[in-house]
Image 1 (cartoon, helix red, strand yellow):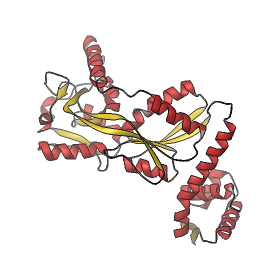
Image 2: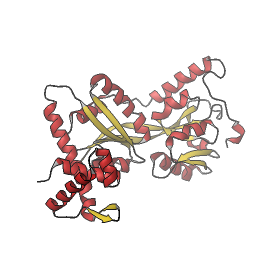
Image 3: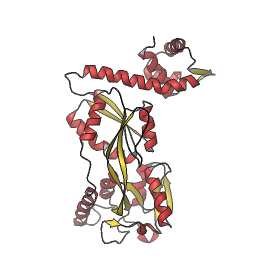
Length: 330
């Protein structure tokens, strides 16, 4: 009979890249780990690893078993947590996959609300570059829940999907670069501008590519692999940025100017998880996410106007970074 410990050892070897690293991470002797995997291979009747010198390489059977083993361990945790949570509040850990904008909102707000409602729940977040990567991490059992933006409803065998809201994409520029009368701009204002963009496969890059194809004369000044450096690069005057509304507060507080598009550029945001048993911590995260009222679309403009008013009332230099030379921006 396959034991839980055998599956845990097997997954650890896969995720740590070998027997030695897995033994160290699990705090077990490597011979014990090897015997356990040998017993698992015997019981399953397949070879899980090919031994190549001092290295272990997953066999075809091992590759097929890896995701299933993660899912079995998730389900066992869920059953144990469900039994232990009877009469008690939610507790435990939930692993959440999210794209960068979703990691800011709604995940940050959900974690804050969970800390208030369920202090025994710990959230561990994993970053993903795209909605497809978020879905894969959930279906493979690497994470229990995912939050992402996607034009199409995410799908997959056994995947449960909830629409959360439509996140809005914004134009972010250094202070004083654009001379426009209101909080919104038409796509034509982008013509002739330089941009800091993320690498392909992200929703933001897809938006840039589409606008560049329709507006024309939009230049890539820099391509960032880490989306966290886009805003600092914008503030240095390297180029404009396209950002989901989850970044609006950070951008405004950092001193950037933020504009909505007219007509708006929006993308559906989704919560995904596998069907079947869920741990109490996972259920608490899902319920809190679905119960947290999404920010209304007009809140972007309201936050922008509020922060601009605050910045304008402060002495020069107290709320903004040094302004780049607008002449080099286009």
